[in-house]
Image 1 (cartoon, one colour):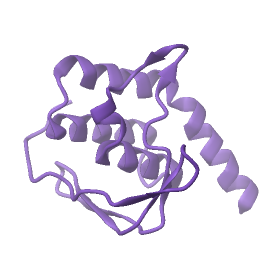
Image 2 (cartoon, helix red, strand yellow; image 1 turned 45 degrees about the vertical axis):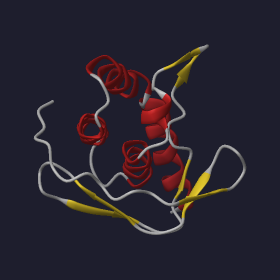
Image 3 (cartoon, rainbow, N blue to C red; image 1 turned 120 degrees about the horizontal axis):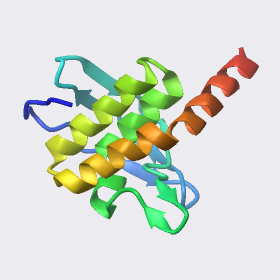
Image 4 (cartoon, helix red, strand yellow; image 1 turned 135 degrees about the vertical axis):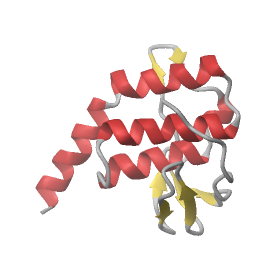
Length: 130
């Protein structure tokens, strides 16, 4: 995954809901390296990165509670891009945030290997609610 450093995304402002989920208090602007501007809407609910396999966390604390995690949740929920592209954007934003090589790739491969479950869960919910 190649990525040039660009302006970091806006900082999220969130309100806690239940200790697991958080609600965006204001819109979140994310500009990806392909020049696209994405707005995660105010009120969007995220669990940040629920990236735990067994006893092991895939993400560091700094990358867990971050714009890359919120944006990744948003793309998985809305399916505005393919799952693979959502994961590429996640990696790109982790790089821009300064997450080191090891933790960035661990997080990227974690979502590539284990992300199919939430992706399918969200697709099934969308079908049932349609």
